[in-house]
Amino acid sequence: GTTLQVATAGDISGTITLKGTPPAEKPITPLKDDPNCGKLHTDTPTTHHYVVGSKGELANAFITIKGPGIGGKSGASAPPVILDQKGCEYVPHILAMQADQKLVVKNSDPVAHNVHPSPTVPGNKEDNKMQVPNGPDLTFSFAKPEMYLKVLCNVHTWMFAYICIVDHPYYALSDKDGKFTIKNVPDGKYTLEVYHRKAAPSNAPVTKE
Image 1 (cartoon, rainbow, N blue to C red):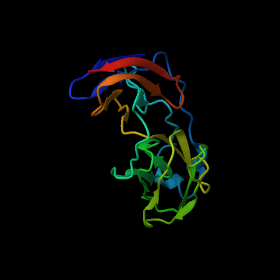
Image 2 (cartoon, rainbow, N blue to C red):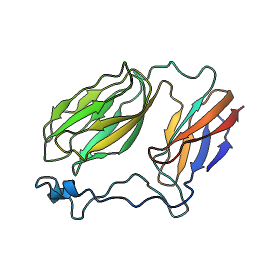
Image 3 (cartoon, rainbow, N blue to C red):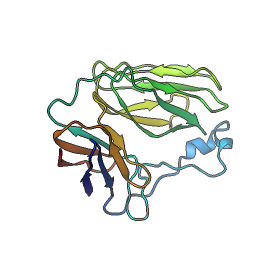
């Protein structure tokens, strides 16, 4: 369910909650079995598809708006979005950014990775770059909106990150308390769209005045 509050000063805030019990996460056994990556963890890591609080607060939901005049805006001048590699996992697992915004990828691991964005939308470029331990940052950008563009590592087949890309600045990811704020939304009538990579999407009309 989606609870909405329309705030003043152009912000839309709310809380995303998950109804029902999420499926159990699975252990990432190939990571633990890898001689270089396994020693970076004391326990066997698991997937983290559903990050849910005690009252169903859902993290990593992507919230955006649709409506007249929204879209077609470049994020080239926005600060870059950072994706790191720690313990042979992508951190964070879910990212959000604007078309043309820079994605900066760091390698905090003592092992080499290859960073392989594999978009499905025409106009977004597939790329594949090696990154040695403590090597220089890699930079990517994507010209078109795409939901859950996959980034993978061909060296470590369990490594994935997913990027939600829109062509305007009106979006947010929910935090660990399920909370989000979309800032500086212009006046108008919009549909608020909520996406999660595993849970069903939902949307709600919202009027910003």
